[in-house]
Image (tube, helix red, strand yellow):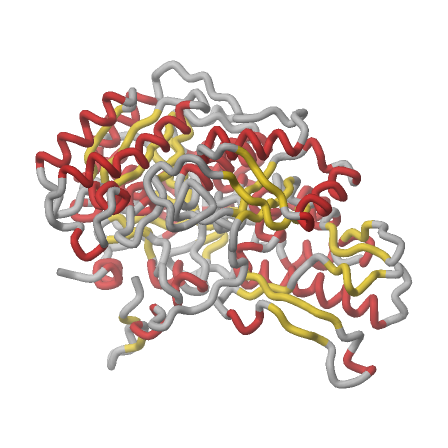
Length: 555
């Protein structure tokens, strides 16, 4: 059996200008990066701004398991399946981060015969967006430290610097450091920190900005520090916003690539959903909605994280209204939630399947609270039995959700046609989309609502540090903004070991930060690493160059 990268390397790609032409993009609206990838410039959106939007389809999933659910693979397969049915579909995805690529998760370009290509480029440097975001963030940090060094006119308290440097790589050694050692000429020593680029507010801002000038405004509003008197200091106060915007003027343009079956795919932005808001850029999604009759987009991790943030943050800011939500699950994930270890998931186990189906049920129930039709997509694996599939089908029907098996990994678009048909039908059903909470609701009530309605918690507890920070942010006027919860992806609770549908627990908010430029408050629950580390055997061990100069081991 061919590996993902071998399949991708054998793909018959079209020149990117031809892919663009298939959805009405002219050469003048395209900025090629080689033969098979390009950026889309503003002239396209200006031309299409009055065109009616297509149908918006959100792809989300159950809580991830070590067996893998294949959400991106299903998203790509669904787009290919729609094209097989003669529909004009455009896929809108997030860009991969080098952290997972070389860490434990691997790439984010799909798998099998449902991939975006050129897979190798996409999973590595792509068009340089991640590097631009990293540079812009670190320029802000450098200018802040330089301001303190050059007389500290604003009176910044170096003990209360809020912004952190970033790197698009897993490097635990940089989580907590001391900078500016070595004497007076090297700056004022202080405690500093690194986060992974996809967790940075600059990434969130890029993904939520409507245009270049909105980007500059948001960058200027980043809360970078406090003064000795306790007054807030913003990015515009240290005069970093203009130069940061210049660094990001190309990165804000969405990227166009294609699937193995030449279906157009727009990839742009990539915040993680466990520590950030987990959606691709507003610009990418809106562009796809103008170009296609159907736009298929995804949100990171399970619906308790990515989908909730997509619906309550991204849709609210962008004025988007999804026509259908696809919930990806697998027979294997249900058995895992039923107590079966990863090594034994191949064997039929109806008792564990039934026990673990409560996790799928919780996600169906949660998504229905937003008033949008839900279709459950079972990503098929070779060991799934007819008896197991029939149980899942009956379970979904009992929960009031449509159901389809997809064989997108093994069969590409052909194996996704049944799912595509279900999704097309769902897009025409009655739709009463609404957000989970009103922005006018007090901030503590918003958190309580998410915890109870989405996680199934009995309530919320706050550490003294978290409550102090939240109250400070409320005093700054941040009470009437959305909430972005940082939480483990592995459980509906804040405890990664609690599988299935946990009950009788409370969520503990351990710390809080204000993403003032992005426009939301981030509340951290449990122990969430914003700078991941490498495992004992990282994916990087398997990535290499063969004797012909080809990349091997990338997945």
